[in-house]
Image (tube, rainbow, N blue to C red):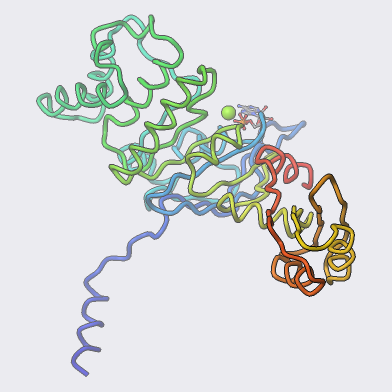
Length: 331
Ligand SMILES: Nc1ncnc2c1ncn2[C@@H]1O[C@H](COP(=O)(O)OP(=O)(O)O)[C@@H](O)[C@H]1O
Ligand SMILES: [Mg+2]
């Protein structure tokens, strides 16, 4: 009895905390009057606290428009959303305070130095001068721009601008970071540096990251979960493995086998009779099997029953970019 009443009391004291860092319900944006464009069409998203969430889609998919609505730069035509528990229409000021944004393209005061630029942004957040000066030095160190601290941002390369933009986005120690195409236009090495920075930030500070990209490979590398968007519509959400499962369910799977002790043709005959196997092919020393669903155990059993020994059994993993295109094509 006592423990029950304890629990009740706790429930009363603990404030209701939002489970998600970002949440949208039927979020839509329509541009234009006569020729209407559904830039964002009925988007339902849930981004968990502390995750790196990738928003991936081709140009014009609606990524930037979504981000602008989430940070209060554009008002939704329909639907609603919350960021860090705050309403994206009614509580924009709270959202500004708790989030950081790297827009695409990012604009700075290019005739000011990196330090002067960050001072300006820090003042917008009323950050006390002593804290501010230390934070500026630390942030520029974090993004690898210590030596450029007193250089004008106008002379920065694209990669430096992106990293500087990240420092700027972090000036108010946000709990949610919005990064619009954080690596677009940078060389591969610079892009890798940016991705490493984002991963480190997420790990060390627990910042929730919402980033957009048109590269599936990029989001696969750094994101816990991915949402695929095209023509304003959400097509799929999940981890890379979840997305692979979606494609497997639609397209089936490819297995590659090597078999000892019996000729491959005999193994093929045995596998052909497994329910769910739709096709097979013998190529060089391997047997390729196409199956509707996961049939690893069943296939191995059939080969063994025919007297064969499976010496290699692999699933041909679909290339991520192909996966991405398949999902977009399917829509
Ligand atoms: N201010 C605007 N007025 C009219 N159409 C717009 C505006 N902003 C974006 N769009 C259109 O909305 C669609 C989505 O654009 P955007 O969100 O920028 O896509 P992404 O960032 O995924 O490339 C595109 O068709 C684009 O032309
Ligand atoms: Mg964009």
